[in-house]
Image (cartoon, rainbow, N blue to C red; front, top):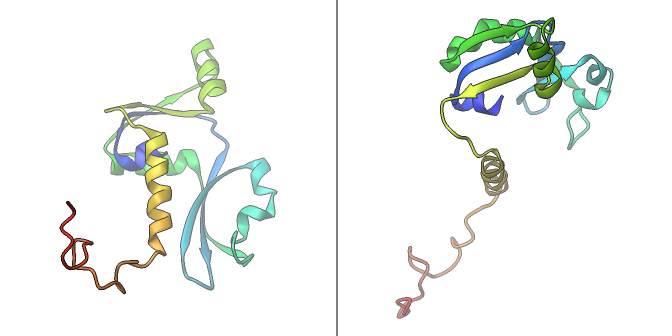
Length: 148
């Protein structure tokens, strides 16, 4: 789904009986929305419906079957949608191997590097500029120090 959000998917392939629901959950204390995709087994686990940090119960704003959501929104991501069935050997292999959702990409995506970048951006999000209280100039050098 990360590749879909990046616009990197040219052909989105989905199992017609994909049993996953898409939830939009809202934290009532912060007003922040979060999207999660849960199987029936995961829906029974209450931890998905509580904020990890504060334990606040999250409000279900929207619940929709993932197949339905994809069918309504795939064009927003500029891709083609193909459904597969598990009634053929290839379809069964796709469902077992990819969990029922996959895609053919337009270009190579390095998901490991993307995850590292997102983690670094998340860590920097709450970090203030540590150079702001220094008497250094805009380039990080003290007066008379030219980096030689």
